[in-house]
Length: 371
Image 1: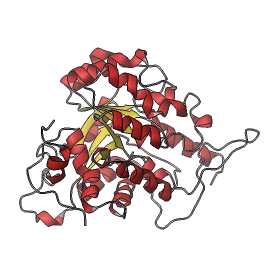
Image 2: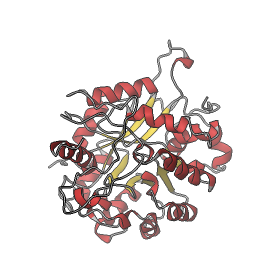
Image 3: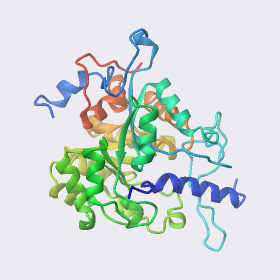
Image 4: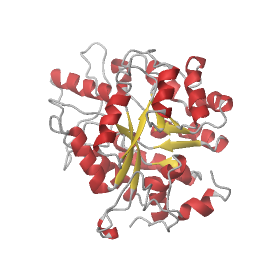
């Protein structure tokens, strides 16, 4: 039996918004610094990105690796345009009928429109082509394969062991092994144990991480943010404490060769995130979701802390792309416009760091700094 839909978060996002509307609510011996900083993502993986030889090399933007996209497709009736980087999260009163989405409502120009019915995958893949993005796409194998078939040079497939929306439902280890050994999957994720109130170091799921270490497959684990300010209403098993990055320490001790992508960069637990990064050189973070769903000043402050603390080579770009195709363009602009990042740091975050983490083949050419 194949997976059911393994990623609950996209469905949760959509269900929250729809509910709100229904209620009438508006591996190198040299150091990374001496090698990777001068490697290019410009010809990223001939097996992943193919550029027409007839095309002018300057006609496309510098390549981007998005390590956090969801294999959604379908219709989003009634979902409104969205203004990213909400300035705040509203309190609610349990005596009232509480909206499931806690963002402060603001006007912005232009707001990000949801995809038209049946157009989401096509629209996102068109954006990826236009922006020169290769993405790690997560979901159940059937959904991800649909994206891979539609854009084989743009999609790096990922899947995990949660089996559907029911907490505790798991795919068998043997079935998951086949996904990676026979099915061509490259990343184990998104692993959303925090939504079940379970630590990533819990022994009940250790067999899956043992498999990832055995197969030398990186894992992507949701840690930190979630719930759009209303996790208590929409996700009663969600625990903020289970997003503490230091909960990964026992897992990493048991599996010392495991490569871990901390999704959402463990936000907002910056001190614990830095402690983990300092203690374990196999850990990277992505800034997905965080980059567009919190106040912009706070987003930039968090990324700047990671960089200023000396971990600029372990910050990876991601969107947490769902519902609104324009999220990818918008999220890239946050990095491109960050005045606290050097041009080289921008390129590393947008591409080079993820290429190293994923061990993608790159050409020995000088990296093109961001303009």
